[in-house]
Length: 391
Image (tube, rainbow, N blue to C red; front, side, top):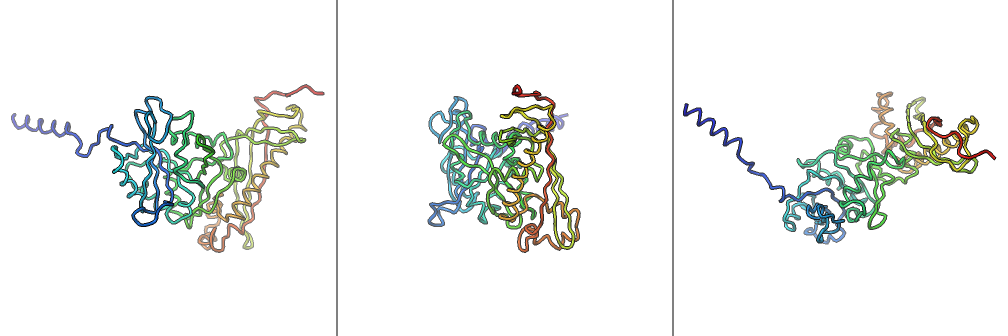
């Protein structure tokens, strides 16, 4: 009986003991965003080639309604900048400057500068975050042509934490056809392990209070380096071709008057054709939408007016897709349309001979022909029949 009591006592001690490596909540420094730049002030090995801006949450500032800042009284966040030759080193150097150890389990955003993205550092700086056990693979990554640290330094009016403000904007791609879907670090890891080219959301700073997420950064899958940025109009064309549009508005002109077309459904079908040594991709785009606004006298019962509007919408989509093809195939020569997947599936034997020269070397993607066909339909349901009286 005494042995049983002893066993129960030991068991109770085991399950009620504390963790040997536990850290109290109030001692953690919650990092919700980081910006990675090349260290422009680096003059020797002591400074390091990388500059890391970490955005720490200040709990007291958040609860007291602070509007943000660089760590003053009442601020909701503090940005701490450190340098080093590796991300690990820059993180450890922060330990000498803050009483809270950096904690990354709640990180929301990683912003990378153009200089980092174009250099060999890009896969290396992500390696730390991919290996770190506290990191989540859903963390978003963005690229900026400016300094990444400056992006995290804004003070938005309607949000206390810049990283949260930026993350919220990035999810509006279903409302804006000129945005690509948010890019998760887990997805980038998959891209780094393969050879397919890919795109990442681009972010720019408008002023001290605002940023803009529009356009995209294009990475070559063979080199894992940034090859360039694509502007908003071309990004809309890319979204039409890839079928990644979740909605958005399109302005078309019918008899010199603006008509707004709201896309409800967009479906894209891509068919590769390989004949006589030539590669061709047929891209069929079908879209259905409504007219939420019109500066033209509009009668939805008039078949001719419907036809004219659908024709104007089609021409506008062709304008975007032509621009996208020009930027992606002719200038950047990088297949972010994911045509390689379609070609590989239909022509596996031919793909084996071309895969090492798809968008590098011989660049078969650059030599391919792209034919786009658009079918736009104006859905009459849910709209008024006529916007003004007939003259």
